[in-house]
Amino acid sequence: MKSRKSSSGWLPLESVAFRWLLVPRLLGAFLVHISDCDETYNYWEPAHHLLYGGGFQTWEYSPTYALRSYGYILIHMFPLLATNTTNKLIAFYLVRVILAAVCALCEAYFYRAVAVRFGPVIARRTLLLLAGSCGMYIAAPAFLPSSFSMCLGMIALGAWFQREYTVAIFAVAVSSLVGWPFSAVLGIPIALDVVLYKRRPLLFIWWCLISFVMVSVPLVAIDSVYYGRPVLAPLNIVLYNVFGKGGPNLYGVEPLSYYLINGVLNFNVVFILALLAPLAVEFQTRPGIVHILQVFWEVLITVLGRGGSYVDTLKNILSAYQGNVPGAGIFIRSRDYRKVVQPMIIWMIIFFTRPHKEERFLFPIYPLFCLSAVVTLHLLPEILTVVLGVARMPRLLRRFFISHLPTLTLVVFLLLSLSRAVALHIGYGAPMDVYKSLNSHQILSFTEQFPEVTEVNVCVGKEWHRFPSSFFLPNNKWNLRFLESDFKGQLPGLYSRHDNSTSVIPDHMNDLNREEPSRYFHLEKCHFLVDLDLPKTTPLQPRYSQDTGHWETVVRRPFLDTRRSHRLFRAFYVPWLSAQYTHYADYVLLRNKLLFVK
Image 1: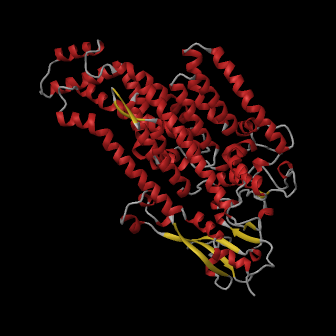
Image 2: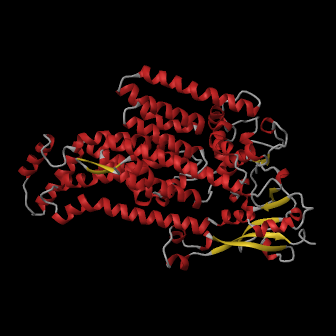
Image 3: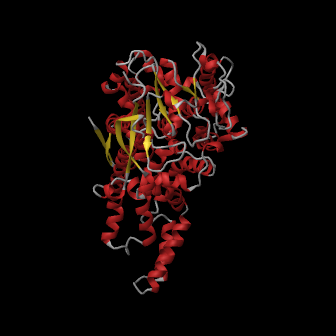
């Protein structure tokens, strides 16, 4: 049996929902590029070091600061430790596939909870928005604590919707202690509900204590072994962000428009509907607002001479208070929808007002964007019906709002989401393709012809932030090296080669994002060089590919040149038109002709 029927219509089973969700999630695992260098250097690189040795260490992993948890890394690497996978590229994609599948499972659980709490109609639409969302497509396979917290957040909110409070509390604890401490914000409405409305403070306190002990004890044990001293990483990252000398504002200060643009790009019309959800819910839960608008509409019609009277208007107002006007019953039902919008509002109030903004900071509320948009779609036709008056609204218009608006919205949403996903892959997929080519027979044959080469140096300058991780380097004979560029922040350093490398305090590390010249490598020692061949140059960022006496282009892939491309067509792919309004540069892998000479 693949679905069940209820009084509100057809509802797919959770197993069917999981399979629907799994398809886009697996596509994302193989097609989504790594867009955040934090994912590479703070998570993939430590994971590579634990599995294969080597790799980069950021200042957050220095025992001096100990802001990141190795427990979080080990959870994701456990399947690889169990299978002992030797091919690093296969290992990379295996982790992404597992992340995608786990996200689909969490989404299926969330979908079931929505069906239980809000009914089949809202559940079906939420499922479709989750499956078709470009934002979820990007976030699901990401090896980031915010993606981890997004999945645990769906478990916590789903359990809350079903009144499984102990599960909700435990999920928030795992999310905030193992993943991202600031994801505890999603637990605020749950705590208020359990303590104030359900009047069960002892249950809340007891399970907070149990959850803290169950999660923090093994976490502290693991991190203390790796750092060589007692460490509670979540506490350290909170202290740094709240009381640190530089704090998070050293790493990217953006205006409010940054999140608004991000929401429109990844969720298009759904993001707009999600922002309207708090207004729609309050509009419905406060009948007086509806009545004022209804009076205004009725009086306007009367003044324009299109029928009706002031007496009829007063009768309608009285009837609405008594629940006799069509749509008045939604006032009571919509009170439950506050549980949808409250976590989203709290999150946005906190994070939208912070100077430091990153796309990944919104991942935990991505599912709530989908559900909130569905709530708006569900309430909007009835709001308009009540305000405008059923008898006065033209039949075709009423049918459109009630029957076709959700369908039209879904179609527009899916088309724009697909367009965005295709644009991202075409425009920004080149770096991962170029680094994958290092594992090809063509590239490996270069080094095999020179057995005296015991170390292969792959260098990057301005493109250091698009390195997808050491999992893309064939073996430990290959190393990524940094060339000096116009970037003057702190680049990560290499892990120590000692046995207890994670507990060794590295030299030349700081928490102020201050440049460390010791990171730079000599150009003449580079066997390969990866670069984006842009027309604009500076003394530290030349066009290496033009030096044909020194470098030979081995691999070339097109990469979107954002400065020379139209804003709309670089953001969304439109067949035929995008080719006319976008321009591409070459993302190249260069071979040092002077080092590969017999």
